[in-house]
Amino acid sequence: MTTRFLTFLPGTVAGLLLVACHGPKPDDVPVPAPDPPQLMVSTLAGGTQAGNVDATGSSARFGYLWGATLDAQGNVYAVDHINGTIRRITPAGEVSTVADLGRPANIASGPDGVALGANGVLYVSMEGQTTLSQVSPAGVVSSLPGAAATHVFNYARSLAADAQGNIYVVELLGQRIDKVTPAGAVTVLAGTGTAGYTDGPGSQAQFSGPTALVVDAQGNVYVSDAGNYRIRKITPAGQVSTLAGSGTTGTLDGPGTTAQFGTAMHGLSIDAAGTLYLGDGPRIRRITPAGEVSTLVGSSAGYVDGPVAEARFVGVLGLVGNPTTGLYAIEVPRIRKIMIQ
Image (cartoon, rainbow, N blue to C red; front, side):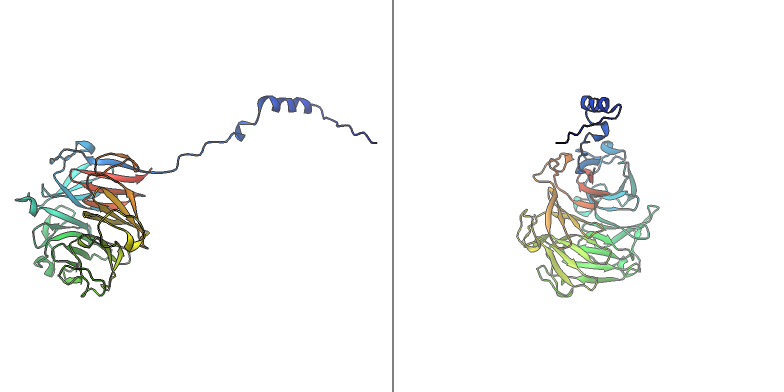
């Protein structure tokens, strides 16, 4: 039998004893993984009190906010319905008044919709009035050009603009979606003028109390058809289809035409991937390009900032942006921000 001897080099035993006494090197100690990003809700400007004060954050006061739009620098432009003004809110929450359209004689005649054109002009719809207005970057209020200056819109509620400078108009009582060119020509993109529910060519399609709309990079227009509890899609050629909604009111998430929406569908936004965000009463719903509906944030009505699981909204009236760079929800006296942090 052969006996093998284990030969240690000088210092080996001491080295083994050192490792045994002191354990692994610091580099070998596992580092806890950082918390995953999550959506957080905060109040950008305003609070619980109404008024008309230009200031920063919670010191600002709004009368009755409604529609909103967003510029490339992240400034929000919101219509202050009661005060008859357009307010600008910077990403830091600094509020200023950029245009005064005149204080309305009653609650049914103030501004309610706004869109930012490619030329930097703001386009505004006035509740109870039949024409639209435009506001120059310098704050000068005037009529639209061409036929649009005198065109009669039946209760224009919401506006959206595309990259070519066209403006799209929701006629809440007219049951139509109109298109206004930069030259002021007005055409009906879809809707017969009679309330109902029909998909198909624009001249045959029907809506019931449409409230908000948004346009994607391909020129498709998406409409919250509140009276039908559905999200409708209109192609540039005017072909209308139903993207989501069963036609029955509720809060059910799920695929396409099985999902349900509430009775207060206000505010519609879209991100670069084509995902829609809808203000649905105290909730914000997310609709994928395939029509899959989920609840992004909100449940029962309330006013709570914080993680989305805890956050509450009283009622969303306008919506603009996206959760990656900032999704801004308009409530009567304040603007909330939903963003990944």
